[in-house]
Image 1 (cartoon, rainbow, N blue to C red):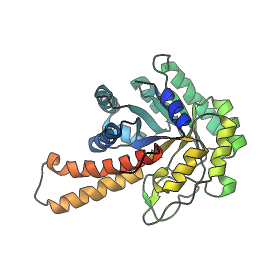
Image 2 (image 1 turned 135 degrees about the vertical axis):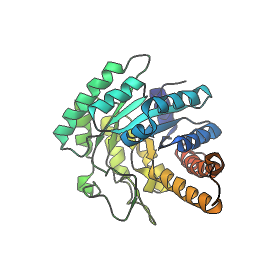
Image 3 (image 1 turned 60 degrees about the horizontal axis):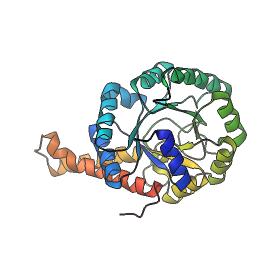
Length: 293
């Protein structure tokens, strides 16, 4: 299987992007694997610190390896890692990429902490298994949730978004392989309306300045047009989390309501898995510029 670095280069040449989907349990992972297999597209599975603690690092690593053995082009990312201890755990376990998130800190402190995390990554990254290292610049909130208001302190005003010159300074200082900027994106999603539009010109300016892959976090609330515009402007990976959780919960509630006496999980879960899978496939088609089904 090609390395994640190689796959990123391929999608950039095609002006497409890789879907990154966070999972919290076996059913969500199965849904992502089914979608990737059906579409024959590479996919990144993300697990945050909380998701890793719940699933178990050895367990998620083993499950991803098993899917790879079945021909699924699946890569594993340690999403939003905030402690050096957890950076080392993920790198040691064999994750394909690690995100160190110090975006809530002042610029210089973010740089210092990101450099420390990079040094941990280097200990476990080799020519056989190159671990891609991502940094984050610009605070966009922290939770995957249904919002009634924008997260406090999130960068949404033009003057608060990541600046191209700061992004270049950050990349040069830290040596990150990928950068997650604040370009109007916010974690979570509104219940009945799209998030504010992305600053597509800002994305292009940052990409032109740093010349490394850019990652869009907090994608669940954005429109299809914004996604395609962001990819054209220079986004290589797009994160989706809240949208999957919403699909999982709604499908689970409907299944339990329709089957009030059923207690066997394997009887209840197929419809839930399919609901999540449908969301993943729809997003993967969009990001890969494929016709909708």
